[in-house]
Image 1 (spheres, rainbow over the protein chains, first blue to last red):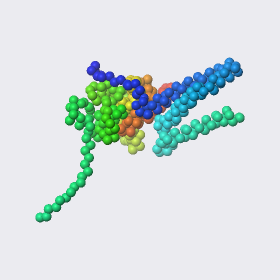
Image 2: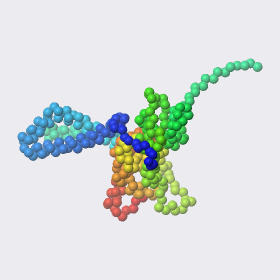
Image 3: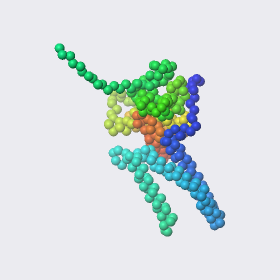
Length: 130
Length: 227
């Protein structure tokens, strides 16, 4: 590198240059959201330990419209995070049961089905009266 | 002698090179790299309307929606106009020893036999033409210039998969560093812009797996040798 070179500088808003960059940034944001939501659940446990009134107050806070709307946005980001990673699994490490690796769309579909199955089982365990 | 008139209707197509036309007829000071004009030398990469492309393989009709914006490849220092400095890439490429490494070449009159499936194992990565479009498309390289990057990683995998090679361990040691494959967050844009379908994003993820296996092998079986 010589002193006469013109240094390259990344432009602000580079991630809006195409939809794949935007999708990537949203995937990364979804990862941060996952971590933050873990803190919310942790706080829920802390409130539970504090006693019934603290726990009820926390649940009431979660039921307020701004928090519900926020949860909706966070949920969308977490779903995007999960779906985009499922899309990448088959591309990252081609799964080979046959002579040719399985197409990534098949791997994606299997992962989504497994995800829905496990989520359904969890919902059933919580609300199904077991 | 009877004269007759024969009418020829020839459909003509003259794909003019836009940049060469500008240099020849509009502004001879315009500077850019080009050589083969058939998408194999990898010299003429540039950002066309914000997308890294080989300009020789880009039809004006495909990018002509108003003005066509041609810029030097992103993420590289600029030498002049569309010419960027590749020294950093060449150093990174050299660091992964992109050639067959042998501890002992043995009898050089003997053939190192490879079967079609041996070649198929590395054929995809061997198609890399070092055009560096993948580096221009990689936002990780843009923010962390020390990252070894997609093409060098893909070529490392190409030689690691070669049955004649014995340098895999050293390459994985180089790539299993902070500036190596672990910088990659799998944006995947490198594979989208690659004109030869090398799929460097997948190559890096494979290398992550191989580097992890190497690390675990060294941890659990310190005495075991590796290729």
